[in-house]
Structures are given as C-alpha cells and as structure tokens.
Length: 583
Image: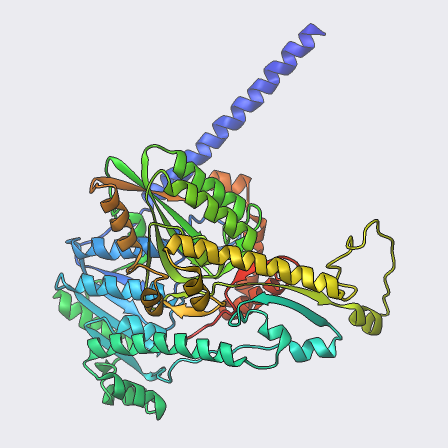
C-alpha cells in the first residue's frame, strides 16, 4: 500500500509539473508572438483616428479568440488623450488623419478629444479630416482639423440636435399592468414613460435647457474653428440648407469635396513623398501598443474609472458594482504609497444603496488623502451622489449632471395575470406586510405610504450628502435638486461642479494638492492578464458582445434599456431619467 501511494504521488507530481511547463510554454509562445507583432512607428507616420470606434473610460485587453478575429488591445479615452499629447512631440509622427463618419463617443469625451487635437496642432503638424457620411458629432471633432473634406457623393448632417423619448403607458394599459410609481423631485422623470403618454412640463423644460446648452456649445466651438458666426450656423440648420456635400462646401462647412484616394494623395504631397511611395498609416490602437507615453515617478496617484450603471453586489466589467468599487477605493485609501485619489465618473446612476456605500468609502478616503473627481459624458443621480463629497469636481461644459432625486417602481400585474393569462394567486403569511411589494396584487394605502416614505427618506439623505460635500445650505440644494438635470456649464454656475476640465485637469489638481510633479498613475480596476481571463471568463460580457454583434450598436442600446426596466422595480433608484443618442 505504501508503495502504491509513492507511485501515485510521484505520478501526480509529474502531471502537475508537466501542466505547469505547458502553461509556461504557451505563455512564452504567445508572448513571443505578441512582441514580434508589436507595431512599429516608421518615419513620416500619419496617426489615424477613426471616430466610429468607441473609446471606453478604461483600456480593454482583448484575448485571442480561436473562433474569430483578434482585435488586440483597445485604449481608453484617457489613453487616447495622452497618445495625442505624446504624438505632438514624437518626431516620427508627421500628422493626424481623422476618419469622420460616425462618432461613437459621448459629448464630453468628444470635447476632450477635440481639445487634444487642437493642442496637437500647436506643433505645426497637419491634421486632415475626411468623411463619407459625416454626422454632427463627428463634425464637432473634425472641425478642429486644418482641413475638412467631404465625399462628393456622400452626406454631411446639419440638422440640429433632438431628443426622442418612448412612452409605455399605452402598452401597459393594453396589458392590464398598472405601474405603481413613487418618486421624490418634481423633475425626476425616469418613471414618466410608465405613468404618462408624453413629457411633463417639468421634463420638457429641463430637457430643452440642457439640450440647448449642448447645442450652443457645439455651435460656439465650430464657429471658432470655421470662422462662421453662430447665428449663421444655426440658421443653416433651421432652413435645412445643407442637403448635399456641395451645400456644405458652399457654406464653408468643409474645405473641399474629395474622395478617399484624393485625400491620401494630398497627404503624400504634405509628406513630400512620391506617388508610388507607401503611406505609413498607424491606427490609434496600434500606436497605443507601440508608444511609451505613460508618466513615471516616485509618488503614486490612484485613478479609479467608474463607468456604467451603479448596481448592488460585485457587478461586471461593464458596470459599477457597489461591493467591488468599495473594495477598490478602500485598497487605494489604505495604500500609503498612494498620495491622492482621482475618481473618473461616467454614470447615469442606479442603486441608491450602492451609491451610498461608494460615497461612504470615498468620504473615509478623503480624511486621509485628497479626493478629486472628473466627470465624463454623464455623472448624474447616483453618479453625482458618489462624487459630491470630493475635494474638487471637474466637468466638461457638455457633461450631463445633477438629477438629484430618487424613485422606485412596483408593477401591479394582477389584471394581467388574471385577464390575459388566466393565472390567480393565493397563499398564507405570518405578518400583515410579509407579501408587500408582490407584483400579483396592488399595494394597499398603508403600503403605498410606506414606499413613499422610504423614497423621501433616501432623497433627504441624498440632499444632505450634497449639502455637506458642496458646503451649501439645504434649502439651496433642494432648489437645484428635485431630480433636475443640468449641463456641466450650468453646474459650474450652480456650485455643483468646481471647474471646467477633463481627466488630465483633475489629475493635475490632485498632484498640486499633494505638492508633487514626480508621480505615476496607478489605475483601477486593475487589468487581468490573458490567462486569468481564459480561466475566469465573464459570461455576461461575452453574451453582451454576442448580442451587440447580432443587432448592431444602436439596437443594442435599446436592448439594454429594456433590461434596465426590470432593475427599476422594487428598490430605490438614483438614476438619470433618460438615455439619449445624438448623431
């Protein structure tokens, strides 16, 4: 028997060693392939920025997919900003070529990209933009270029901005479903699609104001670049003057009408290379892998990217899990080598409880070290909740923020079950309110009062957090709260935000607060390597990517909205009242 165990243990050990050797061989092989395939920056390289590519807040490390094409690493929006700053002084980068068709990035992200391109131009290197079917969001960035060209047979959208909201009240009536809605804040319109068939006057007012703020900012920036007054630009949209590329050229929105090959011939002339010489184009993704652009230094500043919905529990890589982010902030707080924390928020909110837990951890961190917040495209409701206690808050003029309010929703589906499906319910309970919140019966008067009291209590707590963090009187906070949405420009005037600026401005502020210019960044959530992702795949992420590939980007956003309806039920939500998509 003893001999058997010796043989068994020896065999088991041999298998373990063999597996480990195999893993290291695979790692080495893939590492060798990766290093040999690392992009090179040639002389007279032109950096290509394709605006149709979405840049999330944090970079994404893709793994080799045996059943599809490997996409490689994807830079985050702040990586792209830093790469553009780096390219300014990179002698091998001669210019930038912007592919300006669609723009998958939000308004604040687009503003940061545009500012980085304007900074790049100070190097006297060229920036050329070209679009076949140019949207207004793409044009916003392209307008920073030296020259903008449109395809002679293409299109340039110049129609102004609009927001369309879908209302489900009629559908619910047809299904015999009664939405039982509880909310605090007269502008808190997230539940409007379930309780009305059109926008309330309050929602129409706030939407009109922030949308016009975004549009005015768009016009002002385009006006400065194209030397056309804003009144003329606005009038061109009002009378639908831009119907063809020739119209865009006639009204000086573009510098010429050229096909792709003609633009590339111009780039060759700028580079002083011959007709038959090869153009060295390098995508921003490849430059991300090739360039050494990150700062190094003795001190550390933590940058935490909070993007997506705020949810209870761990969450996924596509949202902000309350438990996960509380743990991340705590790790940065207790790390003595981390001198300051910068939180980047791009979220329309979500769970009120998760928002409170994240706020609490940041409040504790602020006792030990500076906490600075940078707002991205959206930092509203729960997204504002988690940030309001920071030492300083930065936002773009076209950031969507505010929405200080709370709501919850419990559907009464009794008639739906009874009349449409023929299902009835019966049971027993040990206490009067043991089944409170059940969807198969309506809430009674007492239960409705309890639900509204709960929402009011959380709303009061939200306002208290804002009042303390922003050093404002409660009455004043109440006057600018009420669930109302504001643009970043208005938020500055109201005291909800401290300064206009992007993530780099927030990091610079944190560095000044700890009196250092010798620092490096430590970014969270920390990235997993390829082996960890293989061994611990994110099922939800894979499913989401599969659905996105099947239905397309825009339809996938609608699908996500339908999924969110389920999350609204039964728990207090600090969430922005809508999602909007502008082109």
